Amino acid sequence: MNKNKFDIFFAASPLHLICVNEYRRIKGIENFKLILLLHKENKHALKQMYQTLEILDFKKYHIFWIPKNNLIRFLNELILIFKLKLNNLKNNYRFLIIDFRNTFMRSLRRFFKYSEFILIDDGFYTIVAYDKFISKNIFLPNSSYRYTRGVITKFL
Image (tube, rainbow, N blue to C red; front, side, top):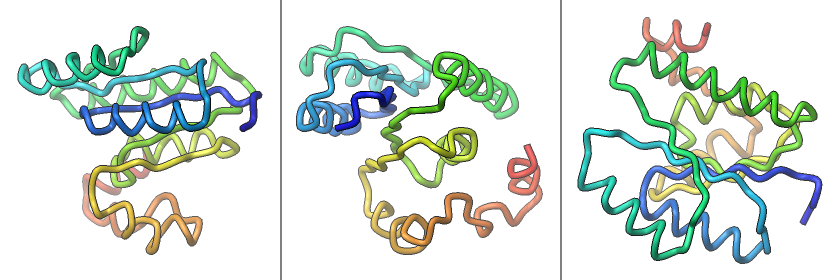
């Protein structure tokens, strides 16, 4: 374990929280930043997240509320990336990311090139992503950015 790394863990579901907890426990990581990616509209999911946080005894976490509007979401994600960069100018992070297909998670790879990334995912796509992209050091698959929206997203 590299003690000079600053750990940032993302979670958007109770299963992600369980994976974060297991990883943190196995690696003996006590100091970390947990960022929850949540939607205000889904009250049932929020209740499940808060119950899981309580059961796993997570006391400190930050909530990133995901806006409905994609442009506002994109700008908020850029602000979050900027804040992370300011907190650790050496970019010596270890990120636990939750979805390889998520544009924000991919952006982290671009903005923090020298950081360590660990993918946790609650689906089979983790294996597909590793075989098709991660093992070949591809972190921005062009096939995801074919159409107008994708071209704009990739440009931004």
